[in-house]
Image 1 (cartoon, one colour):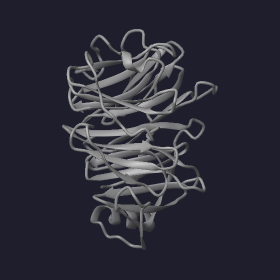
Image 2 (spheres, rainbow, N blue to C red; image 1 turned 135 degrees about the vertical axis):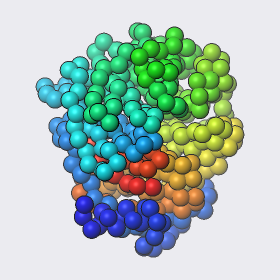
Image 3 (tube, rainbow, N blue to C red; image 1 turned 180 degrees about the horizontal axis):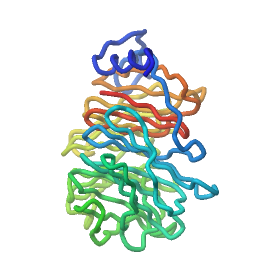
Image 4 (cartoon, helix red, strand yellow; image 1 turned 30 degrees about the horizontal axis):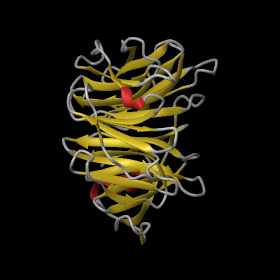
Length: 347
């Protein structure tokens, strides 16, 4: 590990902030931007396969996955980072995966979801044994849209039934070995699901974007049998990330002109907004008051920042050649990905 990387990690852990302070865009909160010492990226272990999804366990491991169904070989890659921060690429199933769209973990394992020619793809990743196995999927799904894990071996998946069909919500309590019968999300017919967060097997929040480029947000309190609309501003185009604990949530929202961090203590009834100075693609939280956000600047340079309370700490990046696409946090570790690069942080 370089001296610069060690410095950046100490800054993250201890909150030692170096740099200059500027205000965020006016009108949406008073968060301060602080520039911190740089963080060094590491090349992906599957350089010919773009990384697409990332997730972290609560015990310190992180998993990144990518696929390219049109390439000859390899068609997919999974790489795992344990608490020591060293990435390893275990063997993966021979399934020809078109893409990975989502990943989620509990304390010891992760599910990575996407699509193949025959429909849903779900892989179970076990960081402790460095194993990746194909997992059963809900019947007749055409592709995984989003995953959320809320307890040990317990997760929810939203998949689709096709372009003209609605999305569906299913649950597992045995690490994906079996899934409940899918509940149709009739309000998503023809729409694209962008985010999912479940507090348990009854209470979930789902975001989608319609053909008019407007965000939709609905909540269920009975495991997907019925849904209630949550009103959002007409300027919201999409909700790209959701992290919820009980009634409290943090979300990342895109509008036509800016990215917003949105917070709620009422399970999406009322939101408090803060505008970001750069375009963000994803947000994840180690705790709801301590998050990481990634994306790109107006010059398409990669951008990473941590959000602690109302302070946004921008971290200068080294050896990161393209915009950051995803980020995930466990209790001990956060990881961010670009198409061919990984970054590790300690909250």
